[in-house]
Image (cartoon, rainbow, N blue to C red; front, side, top):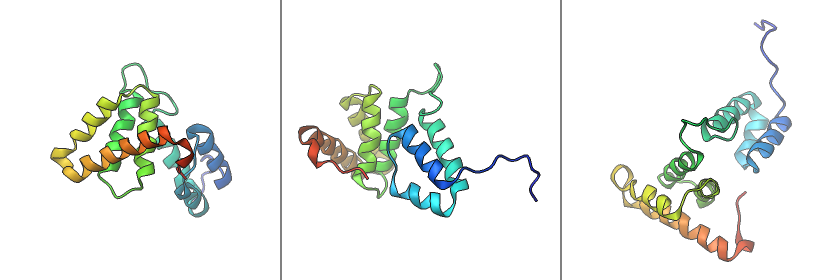
Length: 142
């Protein structure tokens, strides 16, 4: 039963545009969610942006964006995701001041909870970014 007080859910195209505006990119999964369940995508995007420090920006006493993104890159290194997802989070971390040494140490910390494969995946993502820096025409992030 609709109480007449809930806010209307934006349509999928509007949510996709908001994601593009906030994040600077849209993944294929966003298009699928916009088509199948725009209400979920609306909530998911707000939660993602708040958690990652995109909108609103984290407060002064909050975990900096560079470390939020490093945590995501490390989590991605443990999962069967395309390398572009891991490198996306690394790029955003670097844009917010993370160093390669900090990234490497973050991936090293995966050794105990996730094992050597995760450490290797993290190192491959760093190497992938270095290769893109030398040859930007070979990037692929969609």
